[in-house]
Length: 236
Image 1 (cartoon, rainbow, N blue to C red):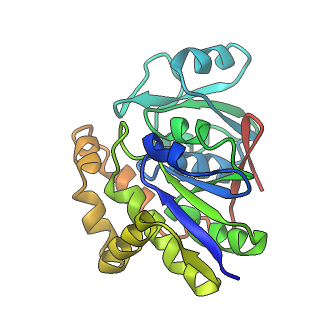
Image 2: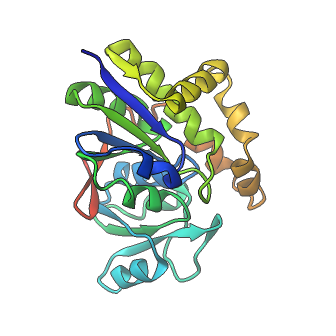
Image 3: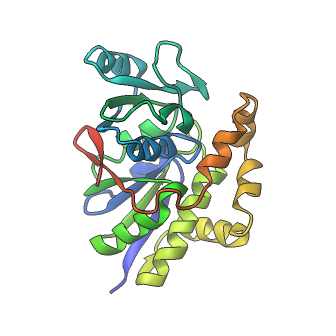
């Protein structure tokens, strides 16, 4: 019997899905989950995603680094922003509290799943292999942008669906089929279509095109998985 794959295109729709007994793969490609995967690759001890700036700052008083953004702009009181490059060489052996516009909300709303893992193009093969090994139904939870779907997260969801249906998984929902179609139509030009998204255009205004290029690299960290365990994300 095939296992099912669902795609939730935005956290505002997550209540229409049952999370219990499933693995939720949370994706905020531009840029939160890409930053988290990068931080884990840089040997951060743990990442604590929180919904609000106040929660993040409170954890900062306990010795954690603080990181995140609102509207794509670094919060001035935080140690780090939401660029993967800001984590490089700065987080080894440290705990990081992170709060972002979209990604940490999607993580918070995924907590009722059997497992929550961190998805990005940077570690997509490790994610696929992990899901196949677990043999559980999958829901890909896209962070979107302020409650609306976006192209880059949907492309990532489609890429996962494309790989998993070759391993006895079944695309259950219309949103999974839509994501799969978007990916298949654009799999040879991921960067081009993703950079045409509204979210990418907003971020380009901040002069961070190199972040967008970085986040669309496939398998920069092919053996790295991150999992939310309680209140923290750790490398698995």
